[in-house]
Length: 90
Image (cartoon, rainbow, N blue to C red):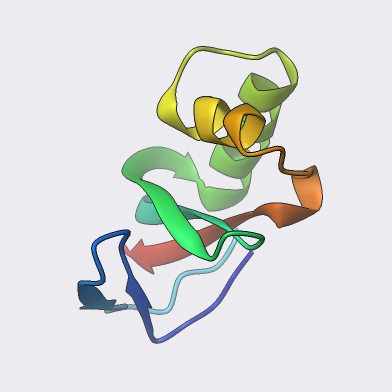
């Protein structure tokens, strides 16, 4: 999991991270960040733990599910090591 006090979207707009979020946090707003290209490709929310959501995203990548996170992964030739999740708010 990636930790930061702020992050920028693909348009350069900066956002502050409001709360301390851990892998065990539930009801979280999170961002998917690709380290290789240094961008946040998706912001979403989950009622599950952040860890469970991270595992689901990895599963969707492995099964080539049709969604923005997976599409970016394969279009830009990433590895799983590039795929990071950052908790933004709980």
